[in-house]
Image 1: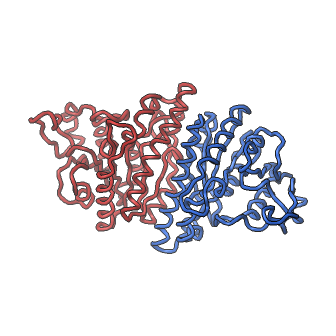
Image 2: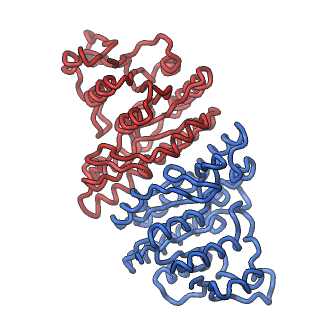
Image 3: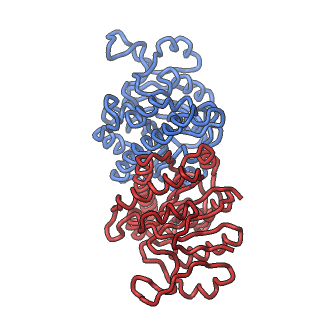
Length: 266
Length: 266
C-alpha cells in the first residue's frame, strides 16, 4: 500500500453556488494553508482534487455536457466547460503557490480517455513523477474525451476512484460542507444523527439515509460518493468525509488526529 | 499525408517582453480572429500552439528551469513556470472562445515525457479526438517531465516537431514578428535581404545568416527553428514563417493565398 492520500475540496465548499464564477477566496486560502502545513508537518504525499462548483456549472447545465456529443452546440459547451474548470484550477494552484506549496496542475482532459463517463485510460507518468518530486499535483473536475458518448464530465470522485486504485493510495479525504454522513439533513432536521463509520457490512442500512447532495453538481451527490467509497473500501482504500467549513478539521484529518468525520472502510 | 496544419503564435508576438505578465490583447484578438475565419472559410483542421513570452520568462530564467532538477528551489521554479504558462494559455483560449472558436486546451505537462528536453512520449488520444470533433486544440510552451534531467522546458517548436511527425501534419505556420528569414536583421540593416525559400539543399549557405532570435526565450532562437524545419522538410512537412504583426498575413498563409513569408520545404 502506497502512502499517497487523495484530498478533495468540494465545488460547493470553494465556490458560491448562487452566482456563476464566484470563488470563496477566504475558504480557499485557509484550506490550502491547512494542506500545506499538514503536508510539511507529516511529510505526506498528497494529490489534491477539486470540484468546479459555480465555475463550470452554468455551461455544463446549459449544454448538458455530461450527456456527451449531440451536435455542434454541444461541442461549444465542451469548450466552455473545459475553460471554466481550468480557470478555477488556476485560482486554486495560485493560492497553493502563495501558501508556499509546489503545486502543479494535471489536466484530466489532456490525459484521459473515458467510456460512459468512467475513466478507461489515464496517462499518469507525469503525475507520478510530480509525486516523486514531492510536489502537490492538482487534478480537478473537468471534461473528458469519451469513447462511447464523445465526451463527458469527469467528476473529482471519478478521478479519485481511478487514481486511488491505480496508485494504490492509502486514503481519500473528501472535504465538504458537513461533518460527514447523517441519518437526515443536519441543517433542517434536529433529530439527524451522525454516522461515524460505514462499512460494506452496514452499508445496506445506511443507504436509505443518503439523499442527493445539496445540488450544484451534475455528477451524482452523496449516494454515489458513498457507494464508490464502499467499493474502494473493499480494496483497502479508506475514505474520510470531513467538514471543510470548520477551521483545522482538514489538517487534523490529514495528520490522522481525532476529528469529527465519517470514515468508510472495510 | 493528413490535412492538419500546426500554427504557432510566438511568445514575443503576443506578450510584451519588456514587462512580466503583459499580454498584447489587441494582437491576440486580431490573430485569433484570423485563425477562426481561416478555419471556417477553408474548413481547416488546425492545432494552435503559443509561446509563453513574458509570462513564464522571469521564473524560467531565475530558476533555470530548462536545466532541470537541481534541488528544492528548482522544484519551486517548476511550479511557478507551469502556472505562468497556463495563465497565458487561459487568456488565449478565452480570446478564441470569444471569437467564436471551439478552442480546447491540451496541457503538455500533463501528457508528455521528455528526455533531455526532447519529447519521447505524448499521449495524444484526447488531442486527436478534439481534432476529429473539428475543435481547435491549443497547446503551449510548457514545462515537461524529463526522464534524464527531472524536468525541462518544452518549447512550442519541440511540441510541433513531435506532433507534426506523429500526426503526419501537412504544414507548420510559425507566426512571429518578421516576414521570415533575412540575410541580416531587417530592423537595423538596410541591406538585409529576404529569403523566400529554404531547402535541405540551400540550407548550408543560409545557416550563416541565422543568429539567435530577438531574445526573450531560453528555448533556441531562429537557428534552431530553421534547423528543425529543415529536418521536417525531409519528411515532407513544410514550415511557413509569416509576420503576425501584419494584419491578414496569418489568415492568407492559412488559406494558401499569396503572402510574403519564408517557406522551408524539400
